[in-house]
Length: 162
Image 1 (cartoon, rainbow, N blue to C red):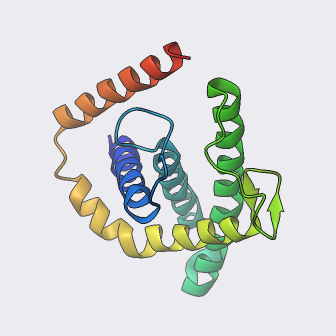
Image 2: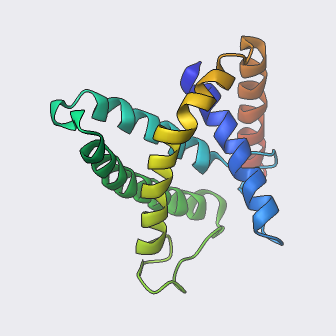
Image 3: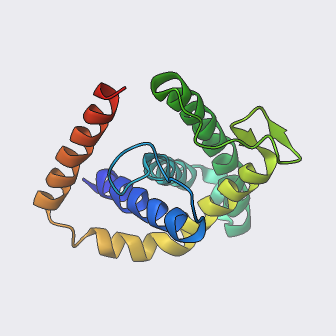
């Protein structure tokens, strides 16, 4: 339930942030108020953080932050690349294109955005996680199950409509 709740919280927050700060932009590929790439990204960040906690060399805070930054930068950039190609393949749409960025690698990734993902990993793990863990503990199981049902309904209806 922990990772599922994180997935939904950040999928919804990511959708809201994009809707507010990027006017005239359709955030996400689904009908509901969630953008799954943010949810998957945060779950990846949590897994990265859990792995880093078990590495003996990461007892020093600065080294741990350094490893977190580069791990999140690489893994989330690969997630974004995979997501871009999957959306294009399944839905025949392109939801983002970084070719206008100076250091892009194809349409779906760029060094500028990779840097943002590394910073996001640090922010999520070392600043937001304690607050989010507290909030997550109050989400009732019935709400998680309802969100799962609605999410799968949304994904199914989107796939069937194509």
